[in-house]
Structure formats: C-alpha cells, structure tokens
Amino acid sequence: MQDNLHDYRKNYEKAELTKNSVDPNPLQQFRTWFHEVQDAAVVDEANAMTLTTMGLDGFPKGRVVLLKKYDEYGFYFYTNYGSEKGKAILENNKVSLSFFWPGMERQILIKGVAEKTSVEDSDNYFAARPKGSQLGARVSKQSEIVVSRQALEDELNKLEAQFESIDVPKPTNWGGYVVKPVEFE
Image (cartoon, rainbow, N blue to C red):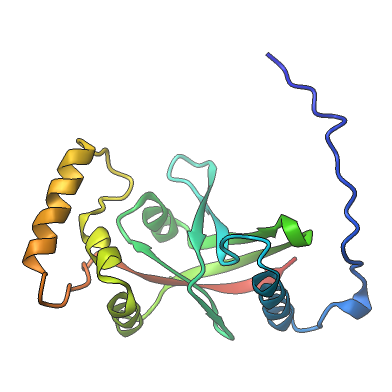
C-alpha cells in the first residue's frame, strides 16, 4: 500500500525570517515567539514540545511532553524518573527539544543536556499541581504494562480516600529535568 503525497504542499507566507528579524539572543527569540503563539491562540498547548532521547534500544525516540518553565538556565519538564524517557536520560543525557507551531509557521529546535532539577524545585512544582494530577503521578507506572483500566481506577479511588484531607506527598521517583541548551535552530 502506498499513498502518494508529492502534491501535498503548502505555501509558507505568514512571516519572513531574516537576520534582522531574529533576536541575537536565542532565548529572547524563543520568548518572543512563544508569547506570540500564546497570544494568537492558534495551538491548544503552546508549551507542548517533542523531547527526543536516545532510546534504550539504540534508536532515537521522541515523545511530547509539556514545558513547565524556562529561564536563563534552560527548559523544564517533569516526569516519572522510572519511565523510559527517564531511563534513557540516565543512560545518555544529550537530548533535543522541538517546538512546532504550524499555525504560525514556526519551529524551534534545541539541542541540550538534561539534568535533574533540585529536589526543592521538584517538590515545589509537585505541590502546585492540582490534587488530581498529584494522585495521577502516584498511580501512573509510566512505561509499564497496565493490567487493566479498572485496576488503575481502583488504585486512584483508594488514593483519593487516603489523601482526601491531607497533602499528597511527591513520589520519590518523580521530578523535574532542566534541558540546558547548547544549540538553537
């Protein structure tokens, strides 16, 4: 089976990209474009980015994660450290991030080195999450086979009762990464 897509094309005409139209500071350029994409509301989640790691099987593997913060140190996301991406980063912390905003005809690629954030940073972010997201992080066994949806729902119901009137502690295998850029494109 073959689909011929050679006539499937689009003219990209929304904005001209010239040396004079780009900020010499790549982080400032990212900030400008990110806010333009947010303000234009042309994508559901402007902070969705593809994180690519070298998979445990030796092949590159990309998956979408959500950017939660960026600053002069790098780009932050949070996850289960025991997930496949966490294990891949432990094995080889050279990663890439890709932001694709088709509605604005823009893309930014970032090569960088991923490092765990401090325990304090991870604790603070976890505490700021909605309770349902906190419980989900405790229930989720990322990259593991799920016995059944019902088993997950039963575990969630048990945790909801257990933490009904108290704070949900952050799982020890959950936290943040900061990707420190070495190259922007």
